[in-house]
Amino acid sequence: MLLLSAVAATGLGQTASRSAPSRPLAKVRLAGADYHDAADFGARFGLKAVRSDEGRQLTLKSTWTTIVLEMDTRECSINGVRVFLGEPVREHRGTLHLSRIDAEKLLTPILLPGSGESQVPVVRTIVIDPGHGGGDPGMQNRALKLEEKSLTLDTALRLKKLLERQGYRVVLTRRDDRALARTKKADLQKRGEMTVSTRADLFISLHYNSVESGADRVTGVEVYSLTPQYQYSHSDPDREDSTVAIANPGNRQDHWNALLAYTLHRELLSGLKASDRGLKRGRLAVLRVTSAPAVLVEAGFLSNETEARKIATPAYRQKIAEAIAEGVRIYANTVEGVRRQRAPGKS
Ligand SMILES: [Zn+2]
Image (cartoon, rainbow, N blue to C red; front, side, top):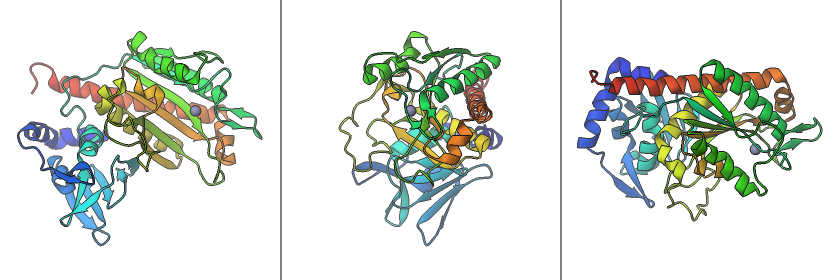
């Protein structure tokens, strides 16, 4: 992938991974969370820091990579892709700071895949989860007679074909119109836990989105990965989740979750030319219980007439499947690259 090749080309990745454990970044406690100076963090990856917008903005930049951070907001951009941090960027003694968990669990996996990870996953078996089914239709567009459950199944079948062509073993959580259990909670748990029973290496849950207000203007793609322990989800700005201190089984894959989500989100945006709703974090039931790197894709809004009409066409759903398959290919290549770097005989 782009960022890995940047690292390989400059050799910065190796320097960064060697120096990181011996010289930990300085920490400061701000608003209840550990923070690092963002410019110091960027320097680890060979990124130059430039302040702009009267100091409100900090750009971390190299030939290949541009990260834009903004004071007092959780929103940032990584090579033009919208990404939501778990904690806002904060100013402290005149410099902008980034939370330690965001640095370690979101930006590092994207900038230097494998850094700090002793285990490098393989990608052989992929579980695709067509959202909803049976008595749960998911989101609906009544005027266009669209139901999320049928659209996700169709997209999943298209994706299955593409991934099998790439040589992967693909398992679907459902192959027809059914729920996996009587309650929604048990149904979601079963879907995620299929990664355990199938010894899967990747989990992709497919969904289509909807809003109640602003339907005429809200469109685009969002991709979720599991919220790291001690962080609050995108949907929880008031910090009401009492389970933040719990480490879910899916949190074991935090590093690869972030890389997978970023890669898939970027490929969906470029493949569909859809608007960018951002890479987000959620403690979503299906993502909590997975034993493999996992994402949930919201591929478009059924509540928006223009986007719903696109999603209703097989050609657009094929495009969605192709973009995700391309994301999986790039992710797997990246992971394989990390594995090869570590192979005996190579430093
Ligand atoms: Zn859904």
